[in-house]
Length: 314
Image 1 (cartoon, rainbow, N blue to C red):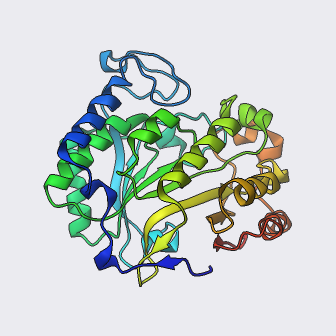
Image 2: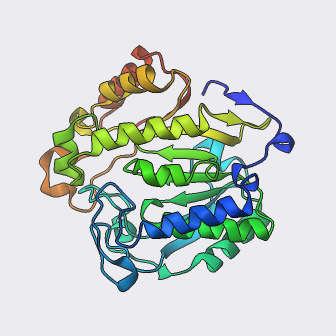
């Protein structure tokens, strides 16, 4: 990994600490208004979630959490040496046929929680040494997340916040997070609309994803780390290499280089394995090869992108 821009952790102030109380309350109100009916994500299902109706994501009237813990397996700039304080939410606004977390994201294996409890978890993770608070699959739960951050701030929360999403996020929702989220960690899954439709049931994923990435970068810009190499602020894009180049890596890398920044931090992931319904699609029924991953590496290099992390293939 090439070195990112650095600032002293002591001099860094998370954005949410600088929002006024009135600004925070306004954001909370606006976010909950998007639930009635639900228009949080680009699907805009318009179901009455607060009355128990469920849309594409299958989420209901309260947040559900699978787990919270110090995660040592995130990108090095997030896990550091103490861990990333992850809150792993259930359900998801994408229906990926190869979902590697399908018991959580599709089957909804988790427990009901609320903003007060989430705030308590954040403080506990901070006290345990977490470098950041990492909201995993948060797109359908933004109102409660903003409210929980507001509560946790009042209890002494002071570490960066990570928004770890599929990249299928609405601009309306992302603008509510401006000045609250410090680090955006979205996926860029596909370069082709038909592929996205076939494997994730999101007809407009490519268009929505690219607009979302632009908005995220506008808010936080390129990655900044502290003097120990731990992330404080900025954009990190994850890209999972798929068999037979189904993700369209070259087109995605060209977009990042031309439309975002050549200094964008990229996590080029090799860990694809067939899960959930992947065996129903012969082209997805195997792991990627070392040759396929090397092809993705070359695409990244040709685009002039050198910031980030690469992996080997087992």
